[in-house]
Image 1: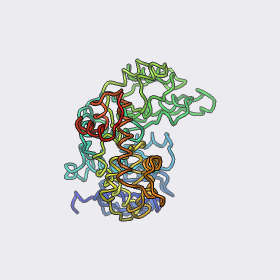
Image 2: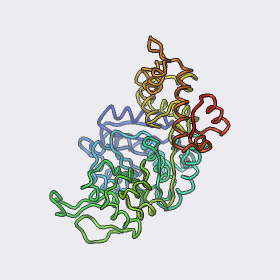
Image 3: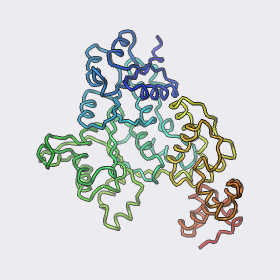
Image 4: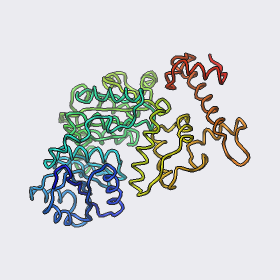
Length: 455
């Protein structure tokens, strides 16, 4: 067979998961075969060695971890990505120590899984030729070509080859974790795991144990030693999402890691070296948090070595058609449906929508279209224009039958966005134009058109 056509083998006893992952991999123009058990895979590997393996941890009979050992004993060498429905840190540690490329929990993040598969194919012993075609740039993992987003891509390319700490700033839903994954994928640590921790999703009393681990007997219920996320990420990257929500006492421990590259498990007194790159992200204004006393200034300066600001979707509206196409391709493949893209009128409404939920809101909208089986739906059904519909209704532009006048809808949204931008910019017209992604001339023209009052 042609090495470049080596397949991705997927093993999962859940048929719905197998079919979803199969569709996702095919959408990336990669060859894929699926199996319901480890024994089926072993029989198939006698005839062909895959370019990459996606293994469910909890397989009936022969578990995913045991299957990995069986393959190693049979000298079947292929990069392994484990998937599981349970986030079990002990299983994660076992998987990573056995040489797994990545460990992902269900429901699976499609982009994270494809990124891991491509990394695996690029490192596969079978695929010398495929390495040259494996994605190597962050632009292949992040979607967008607007000037605002190109600046993000350029900064990712600049910092990725280093070990510098990165602080990713941006509103909720802008894709900060995707930026972090792009940095890790371009780094010399990409063969080791990237471990993600949402600091806002873990109880404050437990987060120190989750990050740094604990010793047996450290507190009530600590019946055995527990390895933390920093140990799991050894040699790789740890992504601390929502770092602004980290409790004050844990901020001190994290500061020590950044300063001295070591930590201690909760209840322990033995220093543990941390060969881990730290990438943090937040939607909060950390400088305001410092002024309020909820975030340490010294930790901020340790994290803010190389800041990257991810712009909100309203500041990169020219990327919307690319993002719509990307999400349509992903969701139609996953659900096995064909849905045509939106027409130009709908795209124009999408470009002027304020997108408070940013890229995540757009992704949800596209998935909703795919579930319906059509993007040719009314404004009210689509859900995304509820803000504009409400505004139009307030201004008397909604017809008795519930329809919204497209021109009036766009003008209403534009007027409100311009007013909000001027308020946020303190009346500075140049700054307001920058926030909206407009030239100063275009912005001034709209100011006159809508007679927006300025400070």
